[in-house]
Length: 111
Image 1 (cartoon, rainbow, N blue to C red):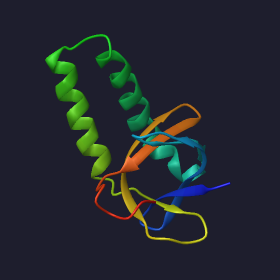
Image 2: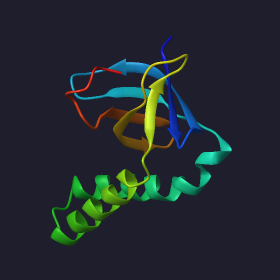
Image 3: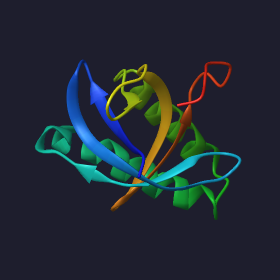
């Protein structure tokens, strides 16, 4: 089973065992460490806004979602394969015990 590691500045935030892939993203089980706790509220809000935007195209919601995405990207989170491989910046979504991600720079080698 392939497992990815979510890290920030070399600190392990979560293990991400791969469940399946599709043409857009990798879907994983989300197994956070205690080090992820400070970031949980950002991802909870991002999941809530994503759900709201699916039903409401309010420009204020879109503005907040874009600002929140910028805030998350500014964290400099990376994902790499457990056991080695390069760390890659990703677009990451977390909802409960599930995580979905795709490379931020698709032109890089796959994860």
